[in-house]
Length: 267
Picture (spheres, rainbow, N blue to C red):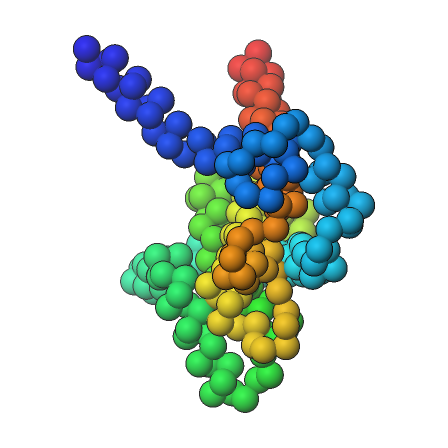
């Protein structure tokens, strides 16, 4: 009975999590402008999304472009900064290491709205014009701790004598960093990059408070503005479905590769 109830609980949890996504995916194949009203199978919304034949297509495409560019810049810069910070934290000792690790964890536990308001007040205090640059800086700020958290375990697993051995064999600190440390930290850096990219892609609160009044929109702020007008653009349904399927396929590929590598190592 315990096993039965445990399985029922897991399936109930999965249904609650994925039913809304499945609901949106199903109604992306109908022309109805109202979600929940089935008017027959159709791929017109997908055609409108890819051909741009819809109302407000310019602002939606611009929002998608802004979202991807900001996420890529923020993920790349935060990966570099986070990796360097993780190496520095790993080499620290005693209370200083615990204190810096604790401070690194605070932004991840801090509610997004507090981070957004804090950065907004900081930019106002420094008289920085809010716009593209402030949004990118804000995203780098809250993404970097996640990269640090992804890279630190790889440093802990690494043999500490390898770096020193490279220096003893004549490598410069930069060469040892590039040819010894970076290849060993690569899995953690990739995980940190993907996590930072996802967090930037998903963010709303920080972007909303740091974008200013110049009309800069990311996908999250565009959907928020669109919803306040009385309803969502129907073409958002196929776009959300495509994003979900793309992320699902990426996760499947990563897990399949991980299983194959584990089998090869076991063999």
